[in-house]
Image 1 (cartoon, rainbow, N blue to C red):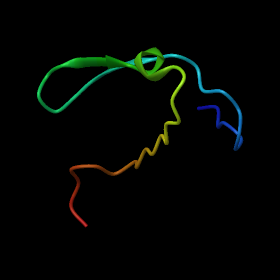
Image 2 (image 1 turned 135 degrees about the vertical axis):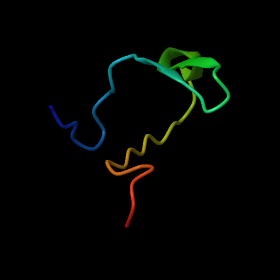
Image 3 (image 1 turned 30 degrees about the vertical axis):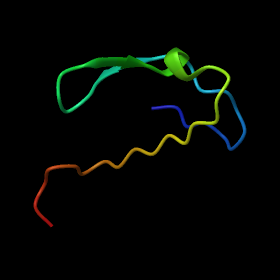
Length: 45
């Protein structure tokens, strides 16, 4: 998987929230957004 460098524009994507709603990164265009992903969500340890 490609990694983005700090300050590089992230590509638009669609994701589901924990309540099942759809959210797109482009929904937040014009605002500052911090994206944080962690690889071991819902795993032991």
